[in-house]
Image (cartoon, rainbow, N blue to C red; front, side, top):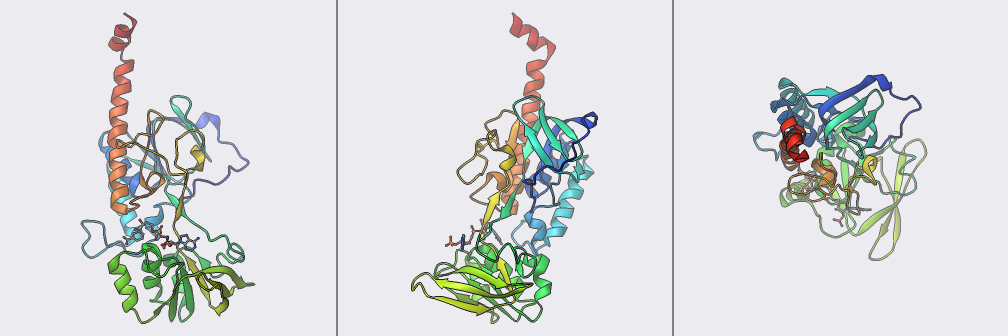
Length: 336
Ligand code: NAP
């Protein structure tokens, strides 16, 4: 998960290290790296900033089975490596750096990172999203001590143990199935009595003897000191509260878009997703957005990649337009 919402550290970037780029892309998930590929092939020499993590959420996915061209599936990390390699082959430059300030009121746009100040003729925002938290007692304190948002990262620690998965969407069910590789028992706690996940995943989960379900229930507390020991659960129909022993709690209840850096500058919906038109244009001319930061609906690798490609194509058109507007003959025409 790319986190572009970290606060700046005390040190300031060296103002002498200003770099002027035609296309700056924030984020190296499928949207960012697809935008990079298209911008690179248009000879725009794009620079792509990784944010705090390379690859976005897909890099934490064990297997991607629904991206065309990979009939046997592909691991998330391998997919990101392939995307990156392909973009770099055509000249994209991936920088391990994070944007901490953005001024979109001036042109070129001014993006400050920990190391550099970028002056960008166009900006493509593909900052992705971060897993949502339950915001219950014990969650924050026990994160990394049994509370996790990534089965691929942490599943191994739960060999032979019992874990809880919270959520009923594709992520929760997919990750629950993955966790059965390690854990003896995986219990999905869902707040309703039917899953939101797609039918194939549902079928696999229902057929898996290690997976159990607790319906119509929410966690009210995660209990433990150095490690997770139990959870408190409330049944939403009866109101009854029970305590249940567990070794780990994996939370998959959706995401929050990483768009705080642009609050007050880019138009967003109530949940913080950047609003674009069909051409991936934001409210600021020259700034485009793609992938999960701008997509509360599909949020698939394939749709994000498509949005990223579209954003880069439009960024190229925009650069052609402004070159035309500022060409000496056009400036002379306008003066007449
Ligand atoms: P999601 O589809 O938004 O599902 C979130 C789940 O968490 C829902 O079941 C929701 O319950 C539950 N939830 C939300 N807030 C909660 C709370 N405060 N307490 C308890 N439960 C809560 O999110 P997702 O599963 O991360 O999927 C995100 C997108 O990625 C989706 O479009 C999904 O299709 C896609 N995705 C696809 C795949 C795949 O195709 N293999 C894999 C992963 C993700 P309700 O159902 O009651 O709302």
